[in-house]
Amino acid sequence: MNAIRIDGKAIAEFLRARVARDVALLQAKWNVTPGLAVVLVGDDPASSVYVKMKARHAQAAGLKSRQCLLPSNVSEAALLELVEELNDDESIDGILIQLPLPGHVDRWRVLEAINPAKDVDGFHPYNVGRLATGLPALAPCTPLGVMHLIKTVVSDLSGLDIVVIGRSNIVGKPLALLLGDAGCTVTGAQLQTRNLPDLCRRADIVVAAAGCPELVRGDWLKPGAIVIDVGINRAQDPTGTVKIVGDVAFAEASKRASYISPVPGGVGPMTVAYLLANTVNAAVSRRGLSLVMSPDAGQVWPASFRETTREVELQQAT
Ligand code: NAD
Image 1 (cartoon, rainbow, N blue to C red):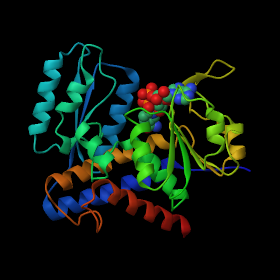
Image 2: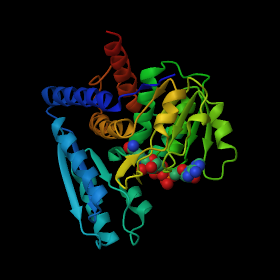
Image 3: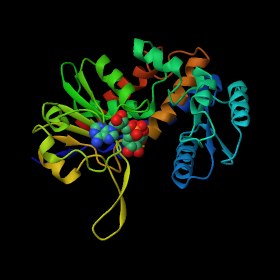
């Protein structure tokens, strides 16, 4: 079997175009331009690249983009002051604090200071709680992106067995909630999990978000399984060249899986696209607007998720 690659890059491009269309609609109808503020503390090269990329895509989609760059020795008090200023800024709908933060800053104190209505990363306990209870919420971008990729290849998830490797607050835990809501039987695996290969072999879908290069081997997979690789790891190939690899041994897994998302070009671009979608959703939701993006815009995250998926499916079918 040779798996079909799930082209996250192309799907994300489609989603960003959809966001741009929604932004144009918001501007034309209500004179609203959604604004995204990205806060970067320090000069970590990888974080700087991510922040620049987010700002670039935000601008391309017609959003107002503000980058707040702070030195690595910034005090927690100063950072909290900035968050407060962004909370009060009516032109800002989404606030993202690029993680990790330096050790002297209490990450949770900063994340909890964000107005939950502007929490486009979906990390605030208010949104986490709403997501867990099945209420409309701003959900984290990477799990939304993973759900979207899965839904492009399988329309009905109910009854499927899914192993999610990793249970971080950013990926694994919220993803397990979303998948459970979709009717899946979810096994949440982590470092302490026993017999992980056997668990994976029973799964219809394996999502790898462990941060371990090529952890999931080809013989861990049931033939025909769907594989979504969230991992982003730097690894040296035999010639010493550093390259980005995922948590899945791609070549081996491709021989067993039916569909597989690559790294790079899989989940990564989807995460950025959902950041933009969440910002537009926050702009709509904060102003109590309705019927902007879809007939069921009242439901914050599932609305854009479902509709965009449907459009992707239609596009692929033609
Ligand atoms: P994390 O370190 O916070 O959590 C890792 C989780 O994986 C933990 O629950 C840990 O117990 C589990 N784990 C680690 N090694 C394991 C193993 N050998 N077997 C089973 N479970 C294991 O990481 P995170 O922030 O969730 O990120 C995970 C990976 O996803 C990283 O590579 C990260 O770079 C990547 N990531 C990608 C995106 C994206 O947009 N593509 C977004 C977020 C994170």
